[in-house]
Image 1 (cartoon, rainbow, N blue to C red):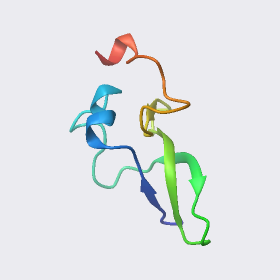
Image 2 (spheres, helix red, strand yellow):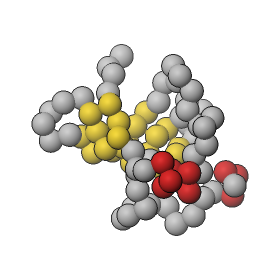
Image 3 (cartoon, rainbow, N blue to C red):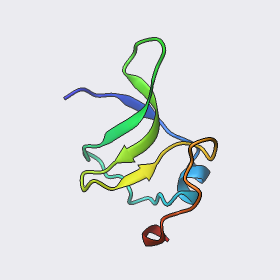
Image 4 (cartoon, rainbow, N blue to C red):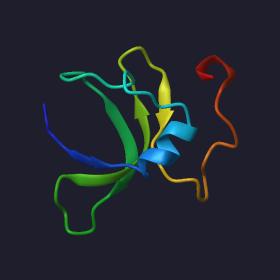
Length: 75
């Protein structure tokens, strides 16, 4: 297993996209889609977080590529 550091959008942006305090739990194994750091370190700007059950949470800001609304099952 390789440990990476993933940066997301601001908390307010995450909440608007359906994130809650219970979205992630300590020890949960995640898959991150995003952009690697230019300096070659093990960090990235995360765009999507894929949970163990296969569901995705958008992790970026409200800029280009952001979903237009919260999925109905997350409201």
